[in-house]
Amino acid sequence: MKLPDSPCSPAQLMDSLVAQLPTGADVVVPIANGEPVQLLDELEARASLLDSVRVHQMHALRDRPYLHGAHRGHLEHVSWFLSHVTRPAFHAGGCHFAPANFSEVPQLLLEKKPVVVLAAASPPDRLGYFSLGVSSDYAAAMIGKVPFVLEVNPLMPRTYGSNRLHRSEVAAWCEASTELVEVPPTEVGPVDRRIAEFVADRVVDGATIQLGIGSIPSAVATLLRGHEKLGVHTELLSDPVVDLVEAGAVTGSNKRAYRGRIVTTFALGSRRLYDFCDRNDAVVFLSVDEVNDPRNIGREPNFVSINGTLEVDLFGQCASETLGSVYWSGSGGQADFARGAQYSSGGEGFVVLRSTTDQGRVSRITPTLKTGAVVTTPKNTVDNVVTEHGVAELRGRTLSERAAALIAVAAPDHRDGLRRAATEMGLGEPGSR
Image (cartoon, rainbow, N blue to C red; front, side, top):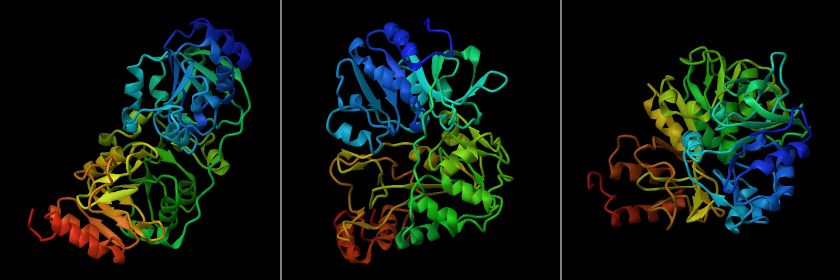
């Protein structure tokens, strides 16, 4: 691939790249703020010159016409995790969706033999190294295997880990200043705080935790500020971790790998979080196939995994990415971390959810999953299910014991109906199955 000398303008770079993209080319763009905004603007402006080119990306944060099928047959989008932007586009038939565990996405994309990775990056340091900033994800796993074209953004934090590229590893680069998308911390309500209390009570000092984004992880973090020697190993780094570091709760001194450091594969939150990551060698950004490998997770003792779900049936199956048969998000790393917590000595996995929806009229603990619902975390991997009514311990229990435990954490108004359903399913009497 012959591209202009760098640095050059986004338009000049894309003129050259588009002329060389073959029919059916696969292009990879990193997750969230790893997107090179102006390069994609220029790519879409030249969509009529393309033939069946597909852009692969997880969790796109910026809306674009091509996401909605505006350039079908020329330029199309493949989402590996639906966002608030790509969800309606997918439902309307504007883009494609590929389900996968986050840990497996690098290998699945490499098998497609992508032509190029288009990525945002920090400016090069004095030794000529760029970093992929707050996104490492699947893109970092492709360094040295696929040509990289970078959009150097002075507002992108310089971070450390396996997400660095030397000038010699970059096919071409341009410069463009774009504000990163911010996701402000979520307000915590009383129900989410109660759920968080049940989880936080089971986190021991010295544990290594996975915290995502949302009100329940935020609430858990608030309740952990008095803990000591916590470690962090998480796919998504969000603002609550900054709070824990500033409170002195997170030191990572008990971690087996990357002792004293926070391990993550991408960061998404406020500017405060991005500033925290900038030039902070206590935060290590690694490729997702390393961060989310259950074997790596399991090497950390007392690992605590916290993941949200949408619906749990009486067998313990969790539907976390669909509402019935309608896709809402994706698998992400939920199964990766649930399995990793099982491998950990003293580890615990928590699947958290509010017990009802629709103002209490609909139970999210159900006899069976809704018709067409996709199982994200299978029953054999689910450890604890937590609602505002308590913790259902499922691991190693019989089917009837699991059903009884789940009914006990369902909303009181729905328990009688669940008991009747359990009896009809042969799950009502202890030892019946």
